[in-house]
Amino acid sequence: MGHTFTHHLFHVVFSTKQRRPWLNEGIRPRLYQYLAGVARRKQGAVLCAGGTEDHVHLLVSLQANVSVSAFVGALKANSSRWLAREPGGTGGFAWQAGYSSFTVSRSNAKSVAAYITRQREHHSKLSFPAELAKLLRKHGIPFEPHHYLD
Image 1 (tube, rainbow, N blue to C red):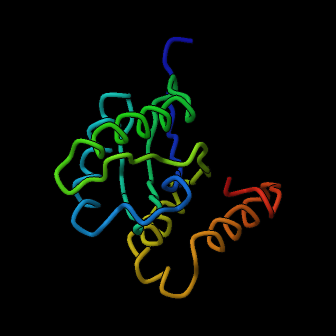
Image 2: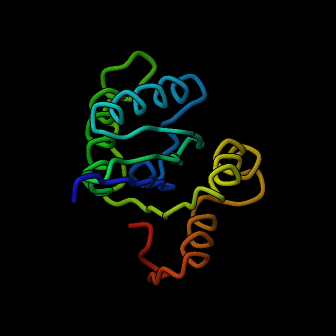
């Protein structure tokens, strides 16, 4: 095939290890900028970022030749090292072992971005575990209620 045309958007969610509140308000904006830089180097783009003290939501665009798992792995590995060294960061920082990702249609991208940017407001009413369970159910992803946050 002479030309390949793609548009791959994903809503990616991952939390700190054991959902520890390591991501304070001072570090989050710098973390999002750092994640955007890693994404560019890995043939992706962070279109929107949000989260709270214990987790991150990203709306990302990926090139066709980039796997979601490799991309998220690079984001997490690089940002873990950065957070451990960054002033205001946390020594011993770690992300959870896994992540969640959901495909996003172009027509739904604005509403997903709005959802991501309103995380502070959203989590005043709903915990991260409840939010993740709700997202998994909404997307028809089976999970074990007692072990999905391990």
